[in-house]
Amino acid sequence: MNTITLGDVEISRVTEWQGPFAPVSTLFPTLPHNLWQANSSWLSPDHWDPATDMYLARTQSWVLRSEGRIILVDTGIGDQKERQVPAFHHLETGFLDRLAAAGVRPEDVDLVVNTHAHADHVGWNTRLHNGEWIPTFPNARYLLSTPENTFTNPINNIPRHSPFGGQTRDDAQIYLDSIAPLHHTGQLSTWDGPTHRLDANLTLELAPGHTPGSAVLRLTSGTDRALFIGDIAHTPLQLIEPDHEPCLSEDEPAAIATRRRLLAEAADTNALIIPAHFGGSGAAEVTRDGSKFAITNWAAFTK
Image 1 (spheres, rainbow, N blue to C red):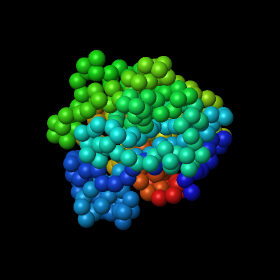
Image 2: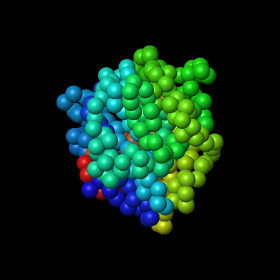
Image 3: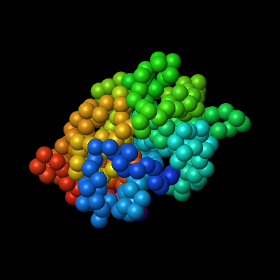
């Protein structure tokens, strides 16, 4: 089952790509290796490969049906994109076919929410047509926070963190092929924080740290709660060890503070945490465990 219902909102999971991304010692330099080993019984085989020490990632989109609209949360890596990360370079994933299998054609999408503007969250904003990047979802409005739009636009020349010991980022290329075309068609809307309401069930909220304009989508419908947290957590190990940040974030202390705040809220309100990159069941519920947290339940999405 790749669809669940929370209150009046139907949520479908559409996977784009999954596989090994980087060694956990490289990606999570402050997470002691013994923590991965101590939790290997549930981190493997969906989140970590003990034999290779590789972090296992998944890129996926979340399709929300709310108040008669189809809302797409994050759009993955995209096909045929020029990317420096080998796992993201010139993909051919069949993502649109899997989106169609979930009952969604590109022209059906009313709203696209980009939690932030990294390559693996905005790629399917556009597709290649006759040598030009055009919006994949022709009838949709695309939402990106104002701080994120400012940060990611290369014309502003804002310094940014270099991951993996100084690897050059391809942010300018990401903006060129996945965001600028939306400006050209007038489909990109930016929003100023701290919150931006989409409808009676859904609200965007600024959650800086991973990037300056990262956002969380909050679902509140009836007695059900969920938080679509983007890259506020990359591995479920961060749900129980929240003070460790991957080398990909712009402001690590702010990212840790944001994650702790959201985990505390999720524990207190029984909200489902829905990150961008978890494999396996894809989403989890947590409870407080002293100064940390514990995973109590996994969502019913198919692994």
